[in-house]
Image 1 (cartoon, rainbow, N blue to C red):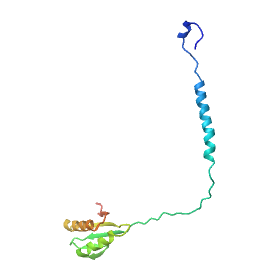
Image 2: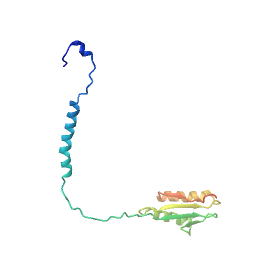
Image 3: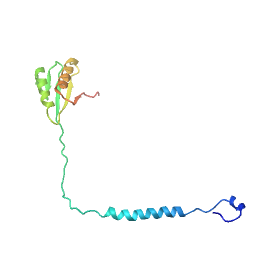
Image 4: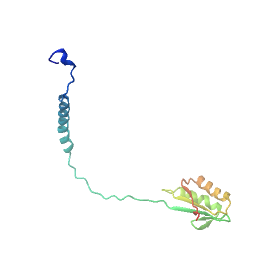
Length: 136
C-alpha cells in the first residue's frame, strides 16, 4: 500500500523490509531455546570401565622354496612332491589361514613352480605370494 500520487509510484524504495528477517530469527531462537535443554538432560548412567586391547593375530607365513634342481623345501626342510599337497591342505584348514610365499630359483623349470601353485589352489590356500630378489 502506497500513499501518495501516482507519480510517486515510479520511485525506487531505498529501505529493506526487516520484518521477515526478524520473524525468522525469532523462530530460530525459540527452536534453539527449546532443543538445547532437551539435549543436555539425559539419564546419568555410571558405565563400567574396561580396558580393551586389540588382539593382533597375525597369520604365520609358510615359505615354500623350489631349488634349481626341482626339489621343494617347506620352511627350509625338504619335502617330496607327494607330501606337498597334504601339508598345504593342513595349512588351508587353519584359521586364520597362513600366507604362502613361493620362492622359485631362477634356474628351475616353470613347471615345478606351476605344480606348487596348482597344489596350493586345490588345497584351498587363498593367499599366495612370490618372493624375488631385487636387482642391484
